[in-house]
Image (cartoon, rainbow, N blue to C red; front, side, top):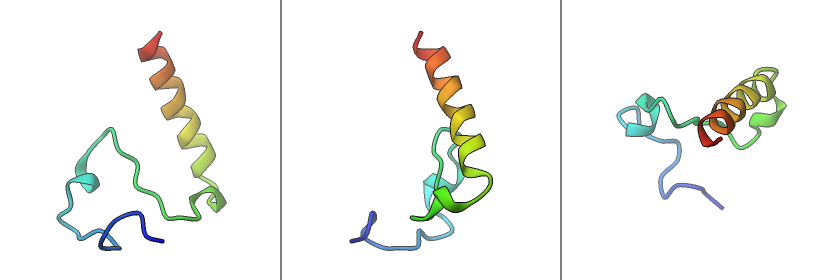
Amino acid sequence: MAVFENEPLPAGHPFWSMENVTVTPHLSSRTKNYLPRSFEIFKHNLHTYI
């Protein structure tokens, strides 16, 4: 099952340059940077929401 109709996303896809979008591989939780980055994004979003 694909997330997008065409994968991988082409180099010119808007997601690559959007600051509020994180593009990760399907196994992204297995990288050493995933959790620290996702927690930083979550903290920012929570602060913005509150």
